[in-house]
Length: 110
Image (tube, rainbow, N blue to C red):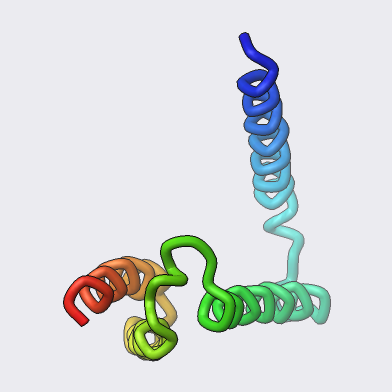
């Protein structure tokens, strides 16, 4: 095995352990967590602010193939998907799938 492939296997193993450890702890402690507590609300706010920062970064400073799309195209996709998010009662599946389809169509035909 080459050095590069062994590093990838190590990275996958470490991230898998971290992911499943945090999920297991979540299952263990889920019954004891008060969803209305201040700490829960803090983590909720941090999660939403991180998502907002990521979306802003993708719109303003796109990387890779997304950089080929114009800024107006990216803004249209975000506004449409945010609208779908609220119409779909805060379901993330529909706007995520729609964003891929809409961005592909807009880039290809506009």
